Image (cartoon, rainbow, N blue to C red; front, top):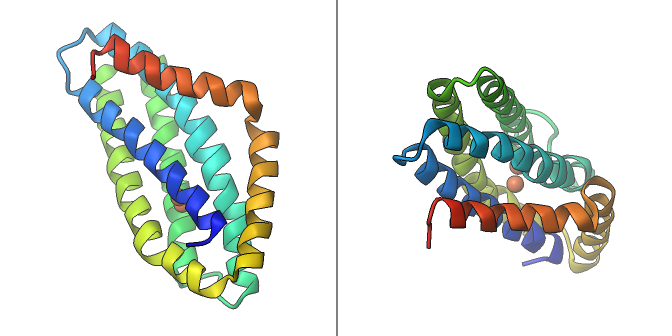
Length: 179
Ligand SMILES: [Fe+2]
Ligand SMILES: [Fe+2]
């Protein structure tokens, strides 16, 4: 497994962890105001980490490198992945709207849709796309990509925000007693 795909798999694990927390919180007995506050923080987390940081690395670096190495741009797995990233953004926008409208029922529906979409998406990347990437890209190319990922992460979130995102996960687990 190359350095770049390994980095993305690690981020998948972090996203899946947050989706597990999300599924538990939205179906918990906690007060709706508390769950909506979580919703607001979750939207921020997903926009920053899952979309800007993670999907950004895939779209701006990995997918481009795969296309340069002969993978089709449209009609193949990359086209499907791009479409799903877009669908994720639409679900996120609806989650955000629901939080702003203080509408927990709608938040719950859209958060479940997001969670379902992303779980399937991650499974496809882990089991299909990244396996193809590991076959197509040699170690040097994977190392170069990893360098670009680090640069992207620095530009998009930086160290301070990285810490903030970590402490959010910790706070949610404490607040909703998930140990
Ligand atoms: Fe993706
Ligand atoms: Fe991904």
